[in-house]
Length: 89
Image (cartoon, rainbow, N blue to C red; front, side, top):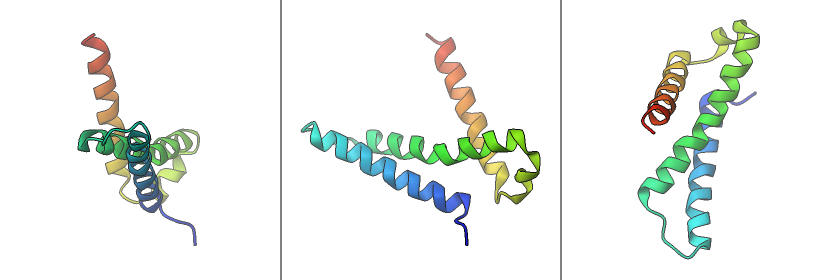
């Protein structure tokens, strides 16, 4: 049985948090909670981004994704954050 998008997202989130924690430990400084959470959230969006790109080419895939509204909302929020940060500079 193939893993669900949610399960893949959790794996990426854990890997991102471990990466953020590990990189800061190697540099000799303790990572802040903000750094670990930002790495966790950023990594967890990778599977969603890939899924949305695939759905752009084959829209029938959207019906097979559980909680698709949540993923579309997350992508929309990220687009708004990037736009606001870019425009505010």
